[in-house]
Amino acid sequence: MKQTAEWRQLAPDLYLFPDACNVYLLRDEDRALVVDFGSGAWHSRLEEIGVKQIDHVVLTHAHRDQLYGLYRSSDHPYTIHAPAGDGSLLRPPDLAHFWKEYQANGCPTCYAAPRLPLDDVRLDLAGDTETLVGPARFCAIATPGHTPGALTYLVEWRGRHLAFCGDATHSGGKLHQLYHLEWDHWTPSGCLAAWHGLERLSYCHFDLLLPSHGPIVDHRPRTCVRQVQKRLLDLISAKGSVCAGAKSTWLDLERLACGARRILPHLYHFGSNSFLLASDSGEGLVVDPQLADIDQLPILLQEIGPLRITAGIASHYHMDHSDGLDFIRREYGARIWLPPW
Image 1: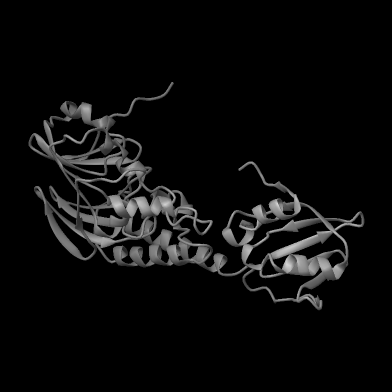
Image 2 (image 1 turned 90 degrees about the vertical axis):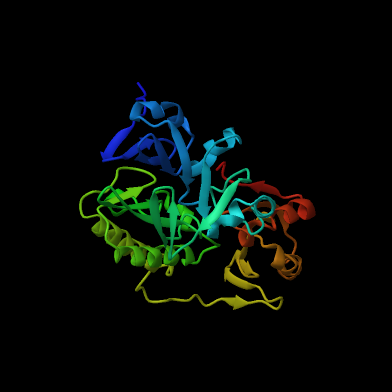
């Protein structure tokens, strides 16, 4: 049986409601502010904790799970605050451009961007600034990762030092949905940015680390931050090398007159990433065709003799390994074989 979410009191006037993300509430008598919004299912249950009105909503970053409940009503009494660095994911013209270009490079720059803009959001929070939000002072530390503009907020509240870290960390020295750090085609830029943000955060003092997903961290929270940093460095090392520490070995390839390379008697490499596998029956399989180099394929076919291209596949869905598939389908009548996912 699915358990119904309940308010949980973490400290005096500090509450947690597990929603699509963790929603944290700071109560000031019968009014309150919340950090992140989730689905908004918690809103109908404010009376359970003696709250009559929400005055402010503070977003840690612009991902759908943090804010999608805000779209359900444009008539609300609270002010919405968000990181200025995530404005391109929240402003109408910029968000429209993002979705138009979502797959332009075969790899999106953000995997959980909002589907709709927030017209009434205030982009008034930025790293290394302090902002008074209702009765609380929010000191923002830039902790990019899940989004480039993501922030962690340090708040002193009822004698406790709190760190609302969004998805910058998870309990146990982990990260929630690591793939969000894949900012581009293959570089570790997202991981490096995440590490640097956590380096800044690790210098700060806080009693409670309050992430957007999973349990809170109330025991040695800065140790949790450093564990994430160490694992990020391990990831950066692994991501930067096919096989770290191994000696590089190179095959002696036969360069053909057309510029392609023969790797094995029936295997050819042309362009940057593309391969042709030829069979004795006169059929050919093209692997990872790239549109920028596809003009080299007919020249290769002319040199090695009659060959009918019957199929094409891609090792993975990045533009420079797959954007030539439609060309070989149209030009050669090849079938395209792709995994269902």
